[in-house]
Length: 383
Image 1 (cartoon, rainbow, N blue to C red):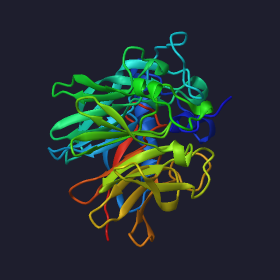
Image 2 (image 1 turned 90 degrees about the horizontal axis):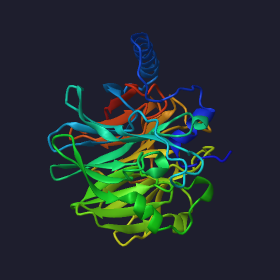
Image 3 (image 1 turned 135 degrees about the horizontal axis):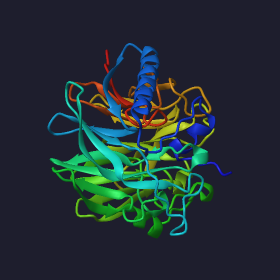
Image 4 (image 1 turned 45 degrees about the vertical axis):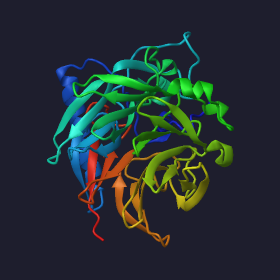
């Protein structure tokens, strides 16, 4: 069978130490209790392995991914959701490697977490989908969130016909105050009409596997790891390509975005994981790309502070495939020196920095029992 190289949650179950099904289903009281007990046991063991700089800030999330501090001071978290059961086989081309997916219109979620770590639902009315059973039914849904002023926008990665959701494409939506949403941009259509220079045929996803989104001067920027596309999207829905990363770098699987005068992007790279092959790239407003840091591993989060220091979230260090307990955060100083800020993270998938100077990380971003297995960690930086 072909290997899904950029779909992180599409390969983990083949090689990691645990196998779980994330299918959405009605649970009996006993099943719910057993699931809660598994989550509690898993989280306790993982927490014991965290470095002293990290603590669990919030729990009860469903495959948490990108996260952002809102203008109201609360933390907003994109969640992959719980997957679905609808198939579109025979209706459209399916994703290579990870397909055929099964999807749901109402399983993806966005949560708000207050300063006390209490979670509330902003909306659970967004698409979510899961890979084929051979790849563990692993889930994608809402990939990231960003604010333009006081308006909340969400990046959809678990939608589109190839993901079992025929009526809603992957794209960017504006989330209304009542939890409803309005489509801003159709990124599924963009992928189909704007091919990149070096697509990977064995890994191609017709909808894209959109992962990270940031806001810059009133526009939104989103990256598709599957093709290497970085696009600019206006709040009016106009889409334009900033750069085709594949044209110069090949299939490096760009994932995490940050802005610090220029756009910076980290890459996951392909599986099996080879030590130190991930990098940080600087992309200028004119679309020029340059490597600025090397020797990294499976980068899924990136933050740059006011002292020009980069904080790099590595999903797994020291294993050939994503493995719980082997995630960490590195700080790269302007001199190039690297310092481990936190270690012992389990399948982390996103990171942001709060006004308090602390880092907030999505932990157990895929792989655990989907219903409530995800966490947000708070990382204290001591120097």
